[in-house]
Amino acid sequence: MNPHQPAQPPIYTRETECQDCSKCVRYCPVKAIKVADGQARIVPEKCVACGTCVRVCPANAKRVRDDLDPTKRMLLSSDRVYVSLAPSYVSEFPDIPSTQIIAALRKLGFAGVSETALGAQDVSALVAADLAKGENRLYLSSACPAAVTYIQKYLPDLTDSITTVLSPLLSHCTKLREHFGNDIRIVFIGPCGAKKNEADRHPELLDAVITFADLRQWLEDERIHPGALPTTPEDRFVPETSQEGALYPVEGGMIETIRLQGGCDNVRCITVAGINGIRHVLSGFKPKSLPQPLFMELLACRGGCINGPCAELREGNLDQWQEVIARADVPAAPVHRVPRNDIIETIIDEPLPTRKYNDEQLRQALRLIDKEKIEDELNCGGCGYETCRDFAEAILSGHAEASMCLSYLRRQAQRKANALLHCIPSAIVLVDKDLRVVDCNRQFAELFSDDLAEAYDMCPGLKGAVLEHILPFTKLFKQVFDSGATLQHDALHVDDRIYQVTIFPIEPSQITGGVISDITAHEMPREMIAKRAREVIHKNLKTVQEIACRLGENMADTEILLRSLAEGFSPSQPVDDDSNDKD
Ligand code: SF4
Ligand code: SF4
Ligand code: SF4
Image (tube, rainbow, N blue to C red; front, side, top):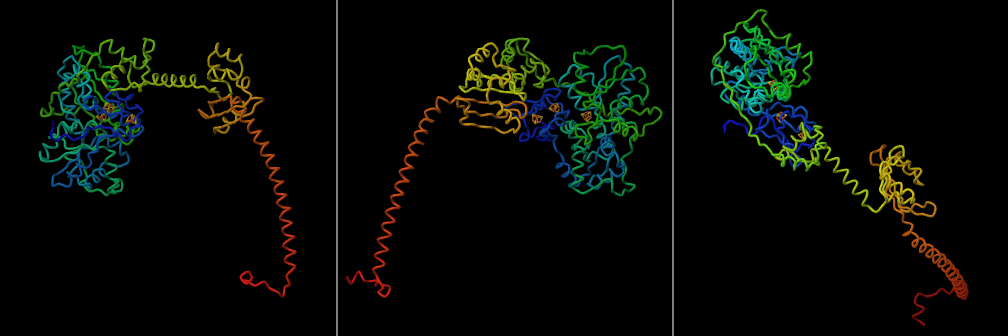
């Protein structure tokens, strides 16, 4: 293992944030995401670091590794640290002149700022020289590290077709080291997460990669506003300014720079962008002789790097594209750069171990998700996999869970609901906003008439039946639709019956459910007891009133007696306090 290898891969999942929605699985072009225990984790060996999951995750749980801390530590050391700035900076900071961007980076502590586009020009010169040899075969570009990793891992037979040249970034690093000395440190700043793989694999050339998003945050933290900075003559790109290499961040830009080298008129060139696009074009292609040299510019990001996963402005729109073209200093005539032989590199394949499952194993996995027959295999893609069989393979390899299949989940839910609906002793009915039955159990039909029970047997669920024709208290359902609140009656008297009724919203304004029990049989004895109790209470009340009357009479007699006694004493003969003692 590389001792410089960071503990975290370039793209990772912040597990506490994952909401288990499987969106990243649906969008990951190589299904490098394993779902287990409600977590969607990246499988690093399968990941090509295209950054798609980072872009689509609604919970911001998929992240690009943050290498700001090691970068800041480098700047605190005595080392000279140079920036390799991605040419897409012009679309990232469209209103800020390059001199102010350079001034801001130098203020952060970098020794100098250089354009990755310089490395791109060298790559184009070497590729053009190769193409000019006129071999009638396929050439695949090595510029986009995510696309290269995809070929190495998923189309390994085509790895030999990748041009034998370092990527523009690594070529640039060699150029900077040649110019400023091998003891310098280099930090790439751009819109790309896959470049972190390049730093991890080539720590001898590239020290760290930070994204435009990281840079924005850093500048903000340091209260550096590039657009407001004064500049000096030192605020210029080193060791020189790029020319045609600045076209690289847009789709087709690399091809244009190759053509500018001259000598490639006989070469057919096409751009394929997006990992899915690359798969569609190249899957099944066997390297063979072609009628003429065919060069393919492969890019993981549609629209090119200006639409990279860590670009703040995500839309690879025409304005951004034009900004790149307008600010590139493209020579009018062929440039004929001298190819650099020190940037030749042979890329080797890294095929993934594949496991084939036999028919019986697949059938068992399909059964787990209720796919008994071929017609059950909807291939809807809801699970994130192209076909039900791909999904079954993912289940077998432990990368997916049955619960990711939406049709299976729906059936499961339906089954559970049905079991509840039909086993519960109470009558249950679901009605829509037009007060028509959506579903009900037989107990509901039995509750209101024998005819209805018969109708139920012919049409289970009574779907579409008008509630008003069945129930004598339809207005209660209407009330629940209107109020959105649950309504409960412990003893609803309707004619000679007593019902216990609970009506509750299921989908507000759409579906309401009712649970109804006929409690007449239970309630009657209670009613009778209550009636007897009321009679007893009534009688008791009478008795109490009589007692009270009599008590009142006795009180009156006592009062008369006391008054007559009191009148026997004269007011001049006060009663002594201790008179009782004397007696
Ligand atoms: S997109 Fe993936 S990582 Fe993000 S919340 Fe959904 S399952 Fe989790
Ligand atoms: S970075 Fe790309 S390949 Fe890796 S898990 Fe995310 S979407 Fe898949
Ligand atoms: S297209 Fe550019 S930004 Fe996107 S992965 Fe490739 S190199 Fe990175």
